[in-house]
Length: 273
Image (tube, rainbow, N blue to C red; front, side):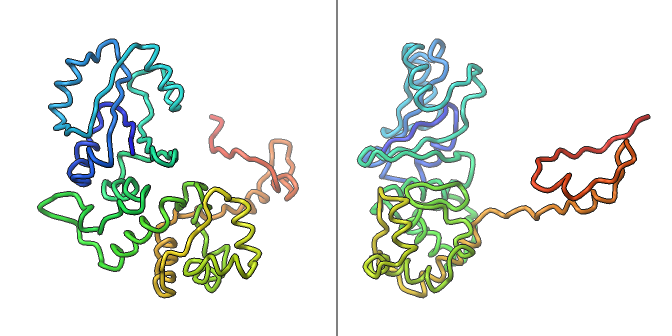
């Protein structure tokens, strides 16, 4: 597995401690300079020493045209140096799977995301906490569900970040009944054998990977759905436009419901003096 990160990001230095011996054996970090004319190998070596870079972390530079071609392929096309994409690009070299993530978010979550790209990299939560004299206290059940989601779900699903190999799980408890969810999570193959129409539709929409049975109990499935509900993004409260119907235009006309329904509106406030 290899990752491409923006140069200068300290997150990788901390991830080395969190991921431990996996770095340099199963996980490799590549930091590619976006300023190859100034970032010579000698300068990158000094920078790597300052960042405590281990053997699994390489700092790369090259001809400007080569760097440009790589940045174009990876979607980082800004001509301004300090506006390069502040993202981490995660790749699984064995499967060819790629995804983007935020290197400025929670370090433990990012480490779990990296490990979850291959099931046997998933570690217990205690192995993935930031080394600190004052570790955050997290309920044991929440840790268990976090680890279970990382192991069983995160490789194929996101919560509120769009479809991946499987569907986005945000709002899944609103789209599906709890009984169906627990049956599908505990034994998806049986749902396929029973020709469940929803299971068949999901298999047709996401044909790359069919969800396997992972030995999750019914109670664990219920807790997993509750965990997903807690982690999904907060939805904004729908805005009622009815008060606008009480207003009068510059022509002395009241707005009608037909003036608002199904239209894109821009509302601003101001004054004329």
